[in-house]
Length: 174
Image 1 (cartoon, rainbow, N blue to C red):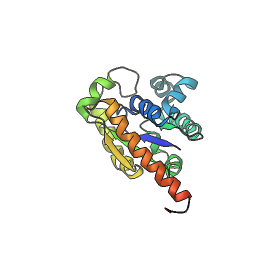
Image 2 (cartoon, rainbow, N blue to C red):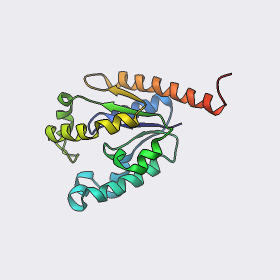
Image 3 (tube, helix red, strand yellow):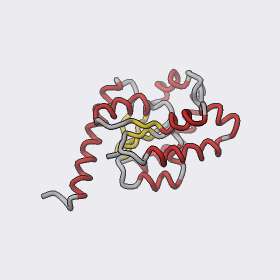
Image 4 (cartoon, rainbow, N blue to C red):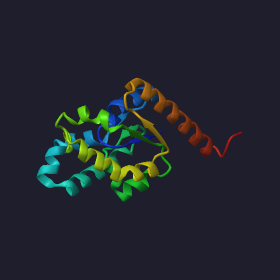
């Protein structure tokens, strides 16, 4: 059982994903955290080595994360990779969105490449919006909602997806 959370930076994929993992009794894996643990802060990687280098590290983290049953949170741009898009086929993928007014405080921590730049975040989200929606089986907006409430909604959707995949594996409903 895997559940993949995608969406723009600061949508709450990590914070909410951890809660979803607890509700589903699954491990939680964050591809950004895998990159940081092995290579250092993402903002530093972007500055010192550029985005293509970061994307290669991110792709390796995606492959590693998808090797186990878990709730997996992708970095916002992980879905740009064609191989990653192919990896998502057949998996339950949830798009977690957030409205710009809720993003400003989340970007202000200086740990992200877009730290504090709401205009850049908005442009980035718009450039990826169609791709996110194409890859996702379901969309939930986290804006101004308690994380526990959003996590419960995601977990309920995931349980339905898991049940449906078990029925498919068994050759249809009996």
